[in-house]
Length: 136
Image (cartoon, rainbow, N blue to C red; front, side, top):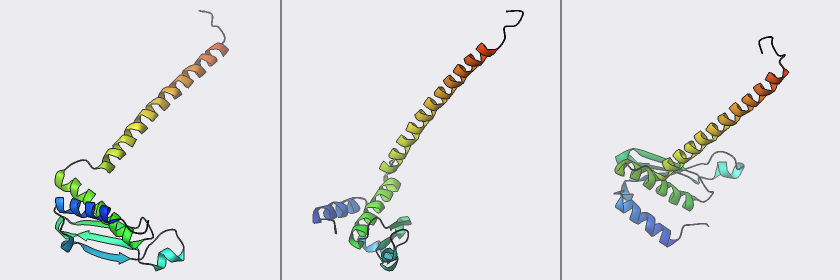
């Protein structure tokens, strides 16, 4: 997938218009990539840096090696952040993070219960090793 299709681009521009994001106010620049990927990633300017001054939102996107796709993803991320600020709704990412936190809480609760059961079993074994005292 080299570039997003016209349908996806139309959906994105419609979403940007519904959120009140003016394409003319976007400040877009391309910077050299960083991270793993060898010399090629460090020589090409495929990383998109997007800034929207009215809301002071900055996005840096380097998901793919394609500049066109990174431009699309940066605008999509901008829409997510602006929607989160304007509408005050919990974003999809926050909901996913909360779901993972709940899963980890449950997991740790189960782990604690298992650990306590193991300790109880071990104490039962140790009780059998003790000599009976005179008062028993």
